[in-house]
Image 1 (cartoon, one colour):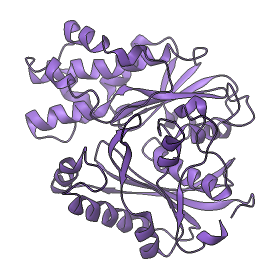
Image 2 (spheres, helix red, strand yellow):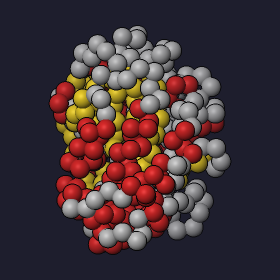
Image 3 (cartoon, rainbow, N blue to C red):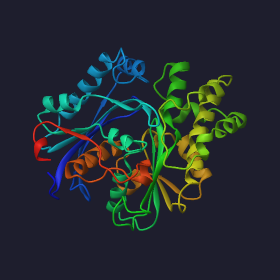
Length: 369
């Protein structure tokens, strides 16, 4: 599969928001996107989310992972087996822990077992090789964002912002020839996004998330708590840099004395302010910020970003992309790059020492890759 031909790759993503599994087809040669195919979504119900929450923070070999692994692999098989005419699968797995300066990274799920069940080659364990070579192992979507910028015909610097459990930013100069070229990309995690807000409303109200930002819309931002949050040294650290889902768990302590609405409003403001601080690291201000991930559905979050930034802030749908599926599409695209022996990260995206490809290829046809 190392020849430069267009293939149909199927990617899957189960993010740290723990809402479910996204799956999407991308037609690509691993460099250019030629088309987008069908998509699907398999939600985790409340009981399944409880199983996954219990596994967060666990590492390879820790006790108590069996139920979560069975759930993750079963849910992925359920959604991925519904696609036809697919050549290759990109399986990210479920991130449980991420500590690039210490124990590494842990994405739960056995790609070899999934490949056997699907009867297709599966690319998985995308992050470990980057970390072994001194990188952060995250974010990994930037090379795909670069291809998306070319697909939409961008001609001036822009940025993609993914507001998932953690926020991550990709700044792009679309005039560059390839993503690993110096000056083409800068990428890093901005800070917490949806995960702590989800944890707040789950702990206080038993809800999965603040739907439509309705709770935050009723509250007021408490400046003292926001200022304490922005004192965190992470925001001064130069990128590339990445975070674990629970790296800012003390956010909940900062709003502990606030009522539900004020706490939600303040935590939403914290996530937006982290993005604003992050954009200060960009080589030049982006002409446009394209937002993907669940956070773009939160009008309070989006309004805070628009009020605090000098560039246009739009959901990725404004340029014909699917913000619910962009990360799944990213791992479809990255799977093709792995199969072709192309890099999936570089110094300006993860801090890795040199442009490097990640991922294990398992299953039928893997010997030809």
